[in-house]
Length: 134
Image 1: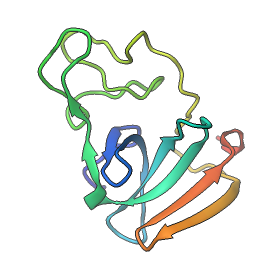
Image 2 (image 1 turned 90 degrees about the vertical axis):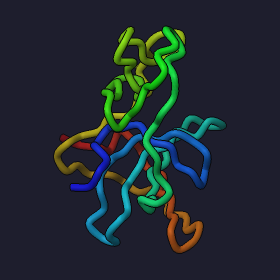
Image 3 (image 1 turned 90 degrees about the horizontal axis):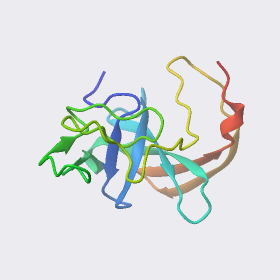
Image 4 (image 1 turned 45 degrees about the vertical axis):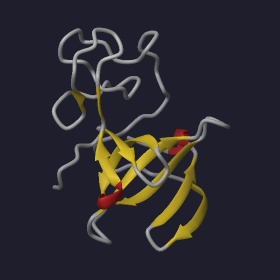
């Protein structure tokens, strides 16, 4: 297992957006699958991302100004996918809200709607969230 945890919030450098770790890819090595919610249409996109393009979420707390909230060290909220402040226990600004993304720890079935090749290191897979099974 690599350095990231399933469900951890990370920063995807290439897209300058936050994402949620889904799993470590067996092949190719050094790649992780992440879920990214598109802002313009609220679809979830699963991407295979090279580990060199991932960073842990590190910021100060919006609620209490705790100097470091870090997804490598602190829990990510399973409901809203924001990192939980170790000091005041706050997650999402304005209150925790379900983001609709379910991450199963055992294998499920994903129905692929479309695969888009971006370049050698990137591919997007659009999927229907309701097709995951337990």
